[in-house]
Amino acid sequence: MPQRLKLIHGFGAVAFGVKDSGFSFFLLLYYNQVLGMDAGVVSLALLVALLVDAVVDPILGNLSDRTYSRWGRRLPWLYLAPIPLAFAWIALWSPPGAEPPSFLGLLGIAVVVRVLLSACEVPSVSLLPEITNDYDERTTLFRYRYLSGWTGGILMMVLAYTVLMPGPEGLLQREGYAAFGIFGAILIAVSVIGSALGQHRLVAHYPAQKPPPFSFKAAFSEIFEAFRERAFIIFALGGLAAYVSQGMTFSITNYLNVFVWQFDRTALTAYPGVLFLSVVLMFFIVSPMHRRLGKPKSAAVAVLSALVLFLVPYVLLLAGIWLQVDTWPSTLLYLGLHLLANTMGIVVMISASSMIAEIVEAYLEKTGRRAEGAFYSGNWLVQKCATGLGIFMTGQIIAASQLPFDSQPGDVPESIITHMILLYWGAAMVLAIFAAYWLGRFPIGREEHEARLAVLDVAARADPDAHAITP
Image (cartoon, rainbow, N blue to C red; front, side, top):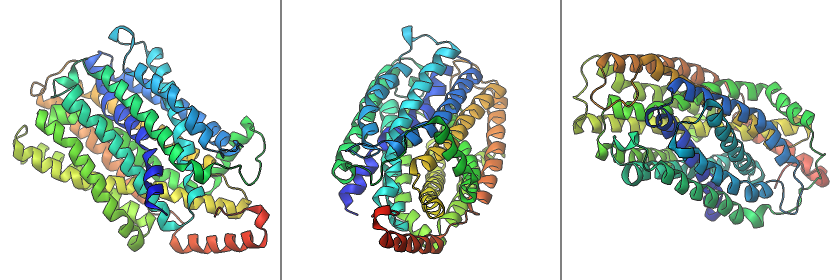
């Protein structure tokens, strides 16, 4: 594939990174510690919004599969959805009067943002199996998607820490969150529309076969079919635990950085740089891991490695043998371990996401039908339910630890810090072991995938009009 195509396709994931950074790192802290809403209530609203979005995803995936236009199946969505999404994103960070909304008010705007984001992301990622059927090139495209997504999210974090809300006390003040929303909205619209324009010549054509009309029954029947595929069930079980862990870890990060490790402004500024370095490091190790170990074993090894690296600092801290927090030696050692842990965490997500493309061919061989949208929307269903559960778990951890509203770094009682760490530590261990077990059992390896492609290629040559496989 041309390098330009890899970059352009990946660029569309910047919008997902902006959303992930906002929802996972800042939104709970903003509505809880800044606007004064109860953490349990906020996390419940975000969980319900994700569950609603997860139910809508199969509909969007099915509509995307059945879109029949001279611009193909996906591009109309990528041109129409980003603009209303940008306005909804601004509203999320600028509640009327800068006052805490009601539970239903927060739920409503969160649902709108989530659904519109899905209307961009599901069609965008569903282009991947259409672009290439090569086992390794799909990993390459996912590397670029993750690189772009993390770049977008990290850019928003850098702006938050250095320009919009500098310093730990800045994250606990209202100023800057409106600008955070406006800049993020612009970046979302530019990335989605720009990526679509860059891929327009490649995918802007009528689909080979006119799909049947949309129906709610068909939308959900396909997603039910997806969950009847053994490979998808195994993927979903492992992915569910991995996504829950990711949602929990991301949403509790600012609480840990501010109240446990007591990062100063310089350390908070350095943190996004560490995340970016982990993405770059992942870029060089994930493909060799896949070639040597395969995707399932790579995912399992990466899950367990990330768990150990993430938890070591907290174990040493509770044991009383960690360096003095709020000092540079402590910060540098923590960031170094976090760099390696986050690298392994991204390897897990790329390995899992890339597995779905193999399931698409297995389903094609079995049924004669392509259903990328159904499987990727099924993945989003799993991911969003799990991420919402992870954020909900963070809210319950914060509420159970009894962290006071408007707390200040260094003033939080040690008992509260210990309680917060232990709850997070226990949940992370259970989730990681579960994810490693199921992702490691994924049944489609390189050999089976390539054998299946050979069979599909023979069928396509025998019946070219069937277009069984995308060239």
